[in-house]
Image 1 (tube, one colour):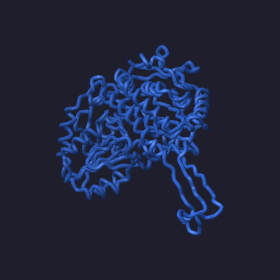
Image 2 (cartoon, helix red, strand yellow):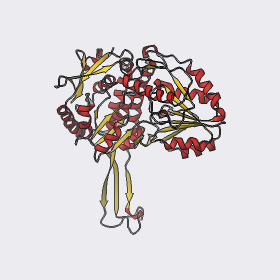
Image 3 (cartoon, helix red, strand yellow):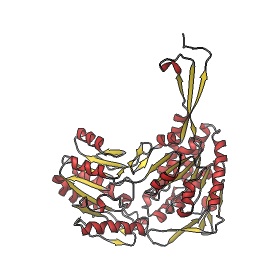
Image 4 (cartoon, rainbow, N blue to C red):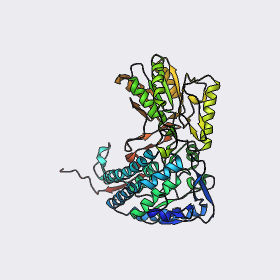
Amino acid sequence: MAGTGVFADVLDGEVYKYYADGEWRASASGKTVAIVNPTTRQTQYRVQACTQEEVNKVMDAAKVAQKSWARTPLWKRAELLHKAAAILKEHKTPIAECLVKEIAKPAKDAVSEVVRSGDLVSYTAEEGVRILGEGKLLVSDSFPGNERNKYCLSSKVPLGVVLAIPPFNYPVNLAVSKIGPALIAGNSLVLKPPTQGAVAALHMVHCFHLAGFPKGLISCVTGKGSEIGDFLTMHPGVNCISFTGGDTGIAISKKAGMVPLQMELGGKDACIVLEDADLDLVAANIVKGGFSYSGQRCTAVKVVLIMEAVADSVVEKVNAKLAKLKVGPPEDDCDITPVVTESSANFIEGLVMDAKEKGATFCQEYRREGNLIWPLLLDHVRPDMRIAWEEPFGPVLPVIRINSVEEGIHHCNASNFGLQGCVFTRDINKAIMISDAMESGTVQINSAPARGPDHFPFQGLKDSGIGSQGITNSINMMTKVKSTVINLPSPSYTMG
C-alpha cells in the first residue's frame, strides 16, 4: 500500500512530506494541499504546502550538491540510476495504486507506466555513458588561412540545477524522463510535481532516495502553484527548466529569463484519412489514439480529417468499437475512466454543447456522471465549432469530412498547435508528401500519434513546445559545450 513499508518515511500522519536535502520533511507553513480522487470526488491524499523560504533552501542545497555530483565519475552516476530503476520497478504496485487514486488511470496502465519509467531510467544511464563519454577534437587548419597550430578539445558539461515540472497524466514517466537525463549529465534536480499525481511522484522520488543518491542532489517540493509556481520558475538558482503541461508553459517561457527551456505544451493532433487507407486499421487506431486514458494524452488523436468517400464506413466501424469500450472506475481496469477534475469535465461539456448548438451529429448520446464522461464521436463537425480547434483532453472526438488532401493539410496547419499528427494511406509516396506538408513535430504513418518509444525524438512546433525531448535529446539539452584550446608554438602535422 501507498505510504507503508519502505515508503513509511514519506507519510506523516495523513499528510505526505516533501523531500529536501536527503530527508522527508513537513513544511513549516503548517498548510496542506488536498488531492481529490477523480472517481469518488473526495479528498484522497494531502501533501505539504511548501513555502518560498523552503524553496530557497532547496535551491541552495541543490547548487552545493551539483558541484560534487559533477565530479562523480560517469560510470558511478549510471550505476546509481540503474539501482533506482530496479527499485522503482520492484515497488511498482504501491506507486500504481497512487496513479489509480490520484488521476484515475486504469490499473493495468498505471503498472505499465511505472515499469516503463524504470526502463527509461536504465536506458538513460546507458545512453548517457555513451554520448557523454565522447568528446571532440578540432584542428585549426581546416579553416582557410590557418596552419595546424591549434587543437580544440570540446566536451559536454552540466548546466547546474534543473527544474522539472511534469503533468498530471504521466506524473511518474514524464518526471523520470527529466530526472534521468539531468542526473546522468551531472546536474542536480528540483522536482515540482503536479497536484494530481504528486503522491505517485513522491513515491517515485523515494526510490531514488533508497538508491543512495547524494543529499541535496534530488529535491521534490509540493504546494500551490499560486504560491511557489512563479517563484520556482523565476528563481535565480535555476539553470534549466523542463516543463510538460498546457498554457502555463507559455507564461513560464515569458518569465524564465536566460535559461534553456524544454517544453511540451499539448496539441490538436490531426488524423488524416485517405480513400485508399486500410479502414479497419484506421478505425482501430482512431479508438486507440482518441480514447486511451479517456483522451487525456497530449498525443491523443484530437481531430479526424477524413475523405468524404470513406467517412461513413469509418464512422460506422469506430462507433461499433466504441460501443464495446468498458466505462467505469479505474480499479476495474475500465477503458474509459473519470477525467482528472470536475473543471476538466465542465470544459469538455462546454465544447460538446457548443458543437450541439451548431449542428454536429452525435454518434452516441452525451452522457456524464460526475467526472465520468462516456466516449463520444462527433460527426459532421465544421471549422466554426470550438471543438474543431480546442483541445478537449477527454473522451470526445470530432470528425471533419474533407474533399481533398489539401483541405486536410490546411486545417491541420491552421491550428496554433503542432505536436503530432498521423496519415493513413497505402501510398507511401503520398504519406511522405503529406508528412512533409504537416506543421507537426512528428507525423505517424498508418498509426496513431504516440510519445515513444522513449528514446525517439519528441517535439512540438508553434504553441506545442520548445526544444526536443527523447532520451538523447534531453541529455544534450541539459548540457552545454565546454572547449579547451591548445596553442602550439609552431604548426604540427601528423606524420608530416
